[in-house]
Image (cartoon, rainbow, N blue to C red):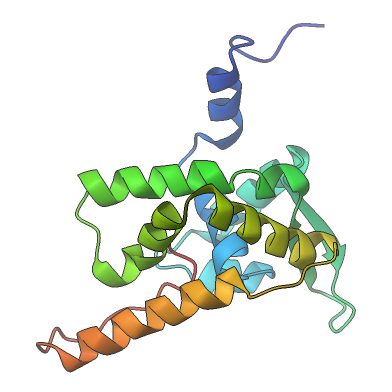
Length: 178
């Protein structure tokens, strides 16, 4: 059987799994935006993924073991997507990517506040966030203050402050963005 990978290099293998334009955006939206249904992932992301691309990425992420899927008991035709343990372990990678983006790209304050807080909070905050995500997605026990709620409050405060500042024509919401 022929090896389907270019090499056994861990960076190469990670890029083969996550290195397309959309996979990490889908994981971000499930992780930080709590978007668990196909329709939410399709319509509530600022990046506006096409339906065929989203279906393909969900299939790939399921196949790679980064997402799981179960039937939604409240609706026969819906599925609920959850992060798996390996996807939750991507938190430090996503935080570092967002930190790099904050330093080297033209981010907006409202869409980068969570990245700033996660970067400043360091490993202890990331571990709390991963524990909370394991509670939400894997059913593991979690107690303590919600990191996700803390990040959401910070986002809402920046949006409110921007609304009080100079008229900028409105601020778009991106619940899942770091």
